[in-house]
Image (cartoon, rainbow, N blue to C red; front, side, top):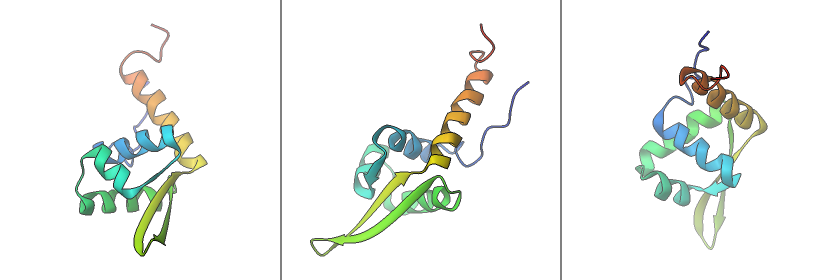
Length: 98
């Protein structure tokens, strides 16, 4: 049977953020914005949703008098991402041994 896809990860931008973080573990806001081609405002909202879900940790600090926001994927985020990919593969017919 098909399993429900995580609605938090089913958003294109949130999925893109998680895909980036799964490979680099941590990235700053500017890097994520450039890689996803998102607006700063939209990205901020989506990062907050991922943080609220417990999928990423967000650290805000100052570096050379400039604010810097870093995002790091959490163990819960890794598990959710892996489950999402597994469930998506089932939709594509790759999770049933075919």
